[in-house]
Length: 168
Image (spheres, one colour):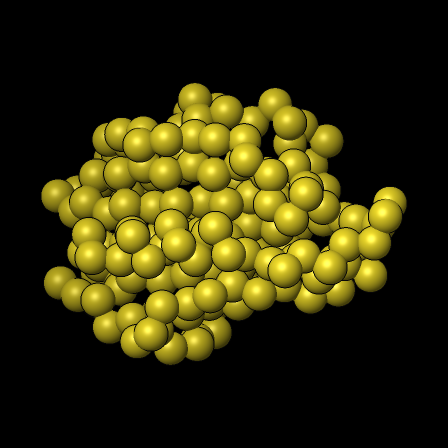
């Protein structure tokens, strides 16, 4: 069951990524590096299609992905994200998930437009909490936190507040 939970958690994070001190010089939004605080106990691992990934034995994970800028970034809402996720899960698992929003904000990260979307997803009898932080800089930087146990979200939210982008 743990392997299934880990596989589902990794797929959740990957699907979301594919849907996503600040040293900024005036006028520059070119990111040359970033920092994400990962809780103790998470081990770095490789996940195809993901820039950085850390996971723990319970299947909880933190993923970073970088994609080209999306012109529609400022139009993203919790409703739009939820509506995009449901068909992906239905196609993959043959079942519709129940997604319950916790919050959606448009708080900047390192002075750049960003959103944070926190929700609970229930699918096939499993429940997970996720937090997505998506930043619109020179590219789109998406950090997805997946909590399979309910034990990590406080640490994930602290990590999300401390994401750092280093600008050229």
